[in-house]
Structures are given as C-alpha cells and as structure tokens.
Image 1 (cartoon, chains in turn red, cyan):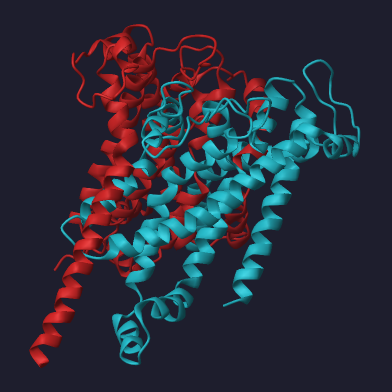
Image 2 (cartoon, rainbow over the protein chains, first blue to last red):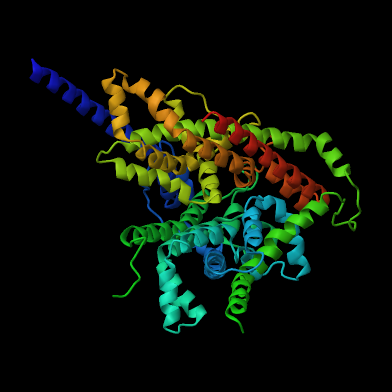
Amino acid sequence: MQEEVVEDSEMKRRIGLIAILVAQVVLLVLMLIPFAYMLSTSFKRNVDVYVFPVRWVPRPFVVINYVIALKDLHIFTLFRNSMIVSILAVSTSLFTSSLAAYSFARKTFPGKTALFFLILGSMMVPFQAILIPLFLIMKNLGLYNTFPALILPWCANAYGIFLLRQYITTIPEEYDYAARIDGCPDFRIFTRIILPLSKPILLSLGVFLFIWTWTDLLLPLIMTNASAISTIELGLSQLGGQYGGTQINIPVAMAGCTVAILPPLIFFVLGGRTLMSGNLMQGGIKG
Amino acid sequence: MKRKDLETLQGYLYILPATAVLGIFGILPIFISFGLSFTDYSVASAAQFVALDNFASAFKDPLFGKSIVNSGIFTVSTVTVGVVVSLFLALIVGVKTSASSASKAVFFLPVMISWVAASLVWKWLYHPTYSLLNYYLSFLGVRPIDWIGSPKNSLGSIVIMSIWKELGYNMVLFIAALDTIPAELVEAAAIDGAGSIRGFFQITLPLLRPMIAFIVCVTAIFGLQMFTQSYVLTAGGPNYSSISVVHYIYMSAFRFLKFGYSSTISLLLFVLIMAVTFAQLRLLGQAK
C-alpha cells in the first residue's frame, strides 16, 4: 500500500514537471517569434515578404536587403557613428566616474557629503526635464550637430559614481597603506591597485553604459539635424515611415534592425561571460 | 604641503572631471529648465517672463490632457499586467528543467534590444494588412485588428509591445527574490495542510512584497517617461490617440518651437512622477 502511495505522488511530480517543461517551451517559442520574424523577413525579397502563409525559412534566401542597407541607408556610417559615440562615452565615463568614486570612497575634504548627495539627487531627474536646456546649452557652445554634443552628456554618470563608490569602499584600505608605505604615489594607487581590483564592476557598468548610449534615441534626435553624425538608432527610427503613404521597404528595415541590435547583444554576452568566470572578490595581497 | 592639505587637494582634483561634466550637463540644465518654464521663450521671440501663464495654458491644453491620460493608462497597464505576468513567468521558469536556462536567456533577449528596433519589428507585426498576429489570430476566429491605424487600438498596441519587451527584466528580479525564500517555509506549510496555491498566497506572496514594491515603483517611473514607442511605433497617432507626455514635450519644443511651454510640461511631469512614486511607496510600504 505504501509503495502505491509513493509511486502515485512521484507520478504527480513527474507529470507536473513535464507540464512545466511544456509551458516553458511554449513561452520560449512565443517570446522568440518577433525575433525569428525579423530575421526571416530580412532575408526575403520585398515581394516575398507579403506572402501568406508565412515562409519562415525564406525561399529564395537573399542578402540583398543587407546590401541595400549598407549602400542606401548608409548603415556602415551610422554604425560607425554609434561606435564612436558609445566607445568614447563609455571609456570617458568609466574613467571620470571611477576617479570620482575613488575620491568619495577614500579621501576626506570639506563638502564631500553634500557634493555626493547632490550627485545622487541629479539621478532622480528624468532626462526629458533637461532636454531643452541641454539643447540650448549645446547650441550656445556651438556644439550642435557635432560629436561632442552626443558624447559629453554621457561623460560622467551619477549612477556609475554611486555604484563604483559603494564597490570601492569594500576594497580593504590595507592595500592602499601597503602601497603607500612602499612609496607609491597616490594616483598610482588608483591605477595600479583600485582599478584592477574593480575590474568586474567596471565591466558590468561598461556593458550597461554601452547599451544605454547605443540604444539612446532622444539625445541624437535633438542634437543632430539630417546629419552625417546620426547614430544607428536615429537612422533606424527614420525607417518607420507611414504605411499608408510612403512605402518603406520592410525587409531592408528588418535587415537594419538586425544589424542595430547586434553590438549590445554581443557586448552583453561577452560581458556576462567574463563576469561569470571571474571572481568578484579576487585576492589582492601578494604573499 | 601638509599631508592633510594634499589629501584635500587630491580629493577635489579627482572629482573635478566628473563633477564638471555633471554640473554643466546634468545639474545646470535642471535650473535652466525650471527658469524657462516661467517664460514664453520660443524661437521667434526672446524669453519674456510670463509667470504662471504656461501652467494655466497647460491645464487648459487638450493635447496635454490627452498625453497625460495616455501615459497614465500606459503606465497602469504595463505595471499591473507586467508584474503579474513576469511573476507567473518567474514561477514557471524557476523550476529546473532542461529548458529552464534557455528560457531565462530567451526571455531576457527583448530587454537587450533597443526600443527603436523593437518598435520597428512590432510595426511590421502590426501591419494593417499583412500582420502576422492577425494571421494567427484568424485561426482562432478573431477578425483582423487594426493595431496602429485605429485610434482605439493604438495605445493598447504600444502596451502589448512594451510588456513583451520588459517581461524578462522583471522576471529575472522575481527569480532572484524567489530564490531567497527558504524552501523549508513552503514545505512546512505543505505539511500543515496548505495546498500549494494557498501556500503561495499566504507564504510566498507576502515575502515577495518588497520586490513587488520595487518593480511597481520603477516600472511606473519609466512608464511615465515613455517616448520611443509613441514616436516610432505610432507617431503619437492617429490623431494623437497614443501620444505620451514626453512625446508631447518633444513636440512642443521641436515642432511647435515653444521652449518655455515645453519646459513647463517637463516640470509638471517631474512633479507627477515624484508624487506617484511617493504615493506608491507609502501605500506599499505601509502594507508591509
């Protein structure tokens, strides 16, 4: 009798697991449909795009949309511009934020707490509130429609300063003292000790900053005008068009989308993997 | 130089680059925006102080009202549906099976792509005549829906797409929160006779309250700031049926060229966001 009862609940558990597995797979597929459709459409000829029932694997399978995206949409230039903006913004931001975070974590100076809270407070204001003044400032600085206008606002990041400061306070000060006793100049302590020990957090922050700058629409939208320095997101947004009026070339738009989503995805996958393999608290004391 | 003075100097020097950038491009604009909202600054005329005129106009402005209603509906919908569905997903995906790791990754995928790319793909999915969604829905006997062309549907279409995009993020947060709930608690409840559903509502859910509060607040804050979907997916239309507040801010400034008025609306939005956040924290915090 006992065995039957155990087998019964074991059966129930197995059925429950299978049901959940099925649910997971179904949801997985549903979630992927937009992506699959985007990819599939990008490899179809324009005429084939409107054929129903939908052919998921395009026949004929063409790459012409990517070619058109490269030539007519100047995808390469847009891509290059986004790369310039994102890489410069992220590297500068990581440097200024970590330097400031080091100061807030390790140094004492009058007004430190007040300044720190002021920086924190600036995080709470939504970007839209400073849209217009930012535009006016850039225009008056003569930077409208230039790369600095797209990069400068990102060159320091309150979120980053906060995050890094919290992290640096967990790095034991003994490392600093040991280096100082050895005669190491202060800035070197920053570059040779603090920064290397902060690699994991700098990496995650870098990945997020890259994604934020790459996918940003508003700043490029207001800072440029029919411009050679348009970013890829801005270029993409102009593919929207109206279905009623101008005919947008759908498969080309999908090809553009595919190209646009790749860098953040790749960075995330790479960054995630390094995060997983590295340890968050690597020992730093020699011997 | 004395040690202490040197340290002070270093302190200021190190924060200088970041503070300079944040000061000029982060904090200064806040003050300018505040000041601008009391003027009628437009491209045509130099700024003239008009005190509270802009605020009065805003309250009488039907477009502003529409945008607030739209953003409000959008926020409430994405928060409620989003939280419930992502919790449900977290419960399902949290169970270890051969597909659970893949599921977690796939659900997070939409979070990684930009709102612009997502809007374009969904615009294609929402095509007036060749919508893939309508095609599949037709098998269920549902008549073709005009997703973006109909003023009644445009906002809803934005909501659906936004929920799809943000599910993975909230799901990951819930999975982390669920992990902190000791399995013994749920098992103990089961031994005491509580079925798994009752166990969920009486044990798991109350323990999830802090995370739910966090997700509700943050999703609401970002919901009220929605822009890209309104701009790219529906262009705010048709007939401004789906325009968001931030889209209206952008439009006032860069289409109607009314910088002063636009700043006023930004200020009002900021106040609204603060009020809503405060109210939510109060409601959810006191309930703890």
